[in-house]
Amino acid sequence: MLVAVLLLSSLSVGCAKWKETRDAKDQAVKASADAMAASQRAESAASRAEAAAMRSEDAAAKAEAIFEKLQRK
Image 1 (cartoon, one colour):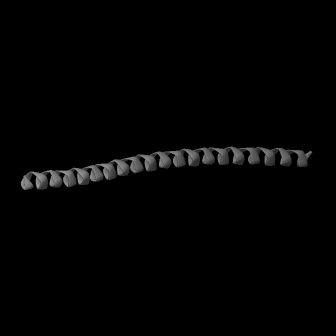
Image 2: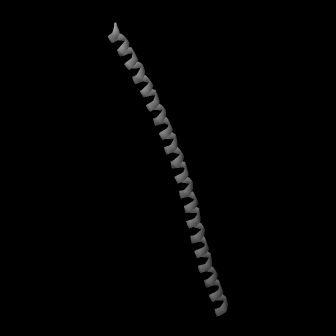
Image 3: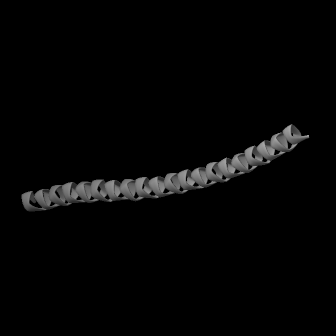
């Protein structure tokens, strides 16, 4: 009887540790996926910012060309 109690107790502790390990792995996988998604969002935002900067530079160049053209008149 004592052996059965010790065996069940050992199994219970083993299962608890296994669940704890599994939960930690699940959290690590979720954190990794969240980090990848955040990285993709950051890359997308950087790409949009770069495109906006290029449009701004183009607009500034056009405005400068118009200004120079008006000064020559």
